[in-house]
Amino acid sequence: MSIAVESPGLSETQRQIVELARDFARTKIEPFAAEWDRTRHFPRDVIAELGELGFLGMCTPEAWDGMGVDGVTYLLALEEIAAADAAISVSMSIQNAIPTTMLVKHGTPEQRERWLKPMARGELLAGFALSEAEAGSDAASLRSQATKDGKHWVLNGTKAWATNAGTADLMMIMVRTDEPDRRRGAKGISTFIVPTDTPGYRAGKPEDKMGLRASNTATVALEDLKLGPEQLLGDEGMGFVYAMEGLDAGRLGIAIQAVAIARRALELSLAYCAERRQFDRPLQDFQAVQFKLADMATRVEAARALAHLAAARKDRGEPATASASMAKLFASETAMWVTTQAVQLFGGYGYMRDFPVEKLFRDAKVTEIYEGTSEVQRIVIARSLSGR
Ligand SMILES: Cc1cc2nc3c(=O)[nH]c(=O)nc-3n(C[C@H](O)[C@H](O)[C@H](O)COP(=O)(O)OP(=O)(O)OC[C@H]3O[C@@H](n4cnc5c(N)ncnc54)[C@H](O)[C@@H]3O)c2cc1C
Image (cartoon, rainbow, N blue to C red):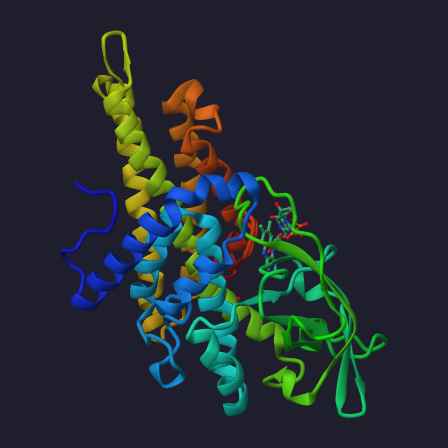
């Protein structure tokens, strides 16, 4: 049995997309991932190539220059990229999910022409900035502010931990548009489309992270950043709703990223246990080792199935918020558990930077934190169970 997704059961289109993504991942990403991790190098050229292949606009309708594929097919491709390097896949995931969903659902025809089409063609890289230092899980308590200056908006504040903030061409930024003395909670937040070369946009130095080290994560200072009315997305005061819609899609991407990290750890563990000998036999001959590998494989399959189920529900237009949270919760905890087992199976070598399971272990952790922590996913799931 194969741990990766194999052809039987896939449509012809899916098979071709998986092959294209796997080939790209294995030749253009995997051989360099350890070095990028060590040097914290964000390979913008590789991201551009992903864009040229259409992987940065996979779910964008063809009318707006995207591939127009369904969510399951998108996850199949993303898994291949993430199995090679989760730090690269996070850019692909964010672009396809959050800014794209926002523009597809709420952009004006002019905004789609100006931003969505070049994003889908891979010419522009996008990110989103919701979190602030004091507003993470409770994102609706954010404080960055936009005030009106005639027809224009002027943004001030600081966003935290924004992926691609220092490398993107545009960011979707959530700020308050309600009056400081008349706060309206989540209803007082709006989304703005902000080109990163706008005066007053300043990305901080890249964060020095535990994992995903090749990915750019930075604070964003908004300093009297002036925007035209055409840069407001959708309706004033609806920005938080748009962010949550985007996160439904985003969480599926993070779920499959976690599946990919776990799958890679399992593939490496299988190869290592076949080769490594102790007590005159390969590790794989010990039943305790076999049981560990069996449990790892079972969890990888279950996590992938849950992610695909949630994507299929979303594709059918069914409510999928709780499904996406379940998929992200289960897959991220699977990634952490499987990579922990992998390090254990590699023994002392597993603890060394020279062996790839150490990176997978570090990369896995963030999947339990970003786009909503595991606790936040449990809150979302519990709320859906009680019908709230
Ligand atoms: C590498 C990386 C990339 C990121 N990229 C982005 C990005 O592109 N855009 C963006 O906007 N943000 C991004 N983030 C931010 C990320 O979404 C937040 O870190 C995350 O939402 C958690 O917020 P926090 O760090 O403030 O933790 P806190 O909210 O302070 O939580 C701390 C702990 O308390 C727990 N907790 C909080 N509230 C509750 C509760 N009600 N019940 C139980 N437990 C609770 C949390 O689960 C967590 O364990 C990124 C973060 C990282 C690390």
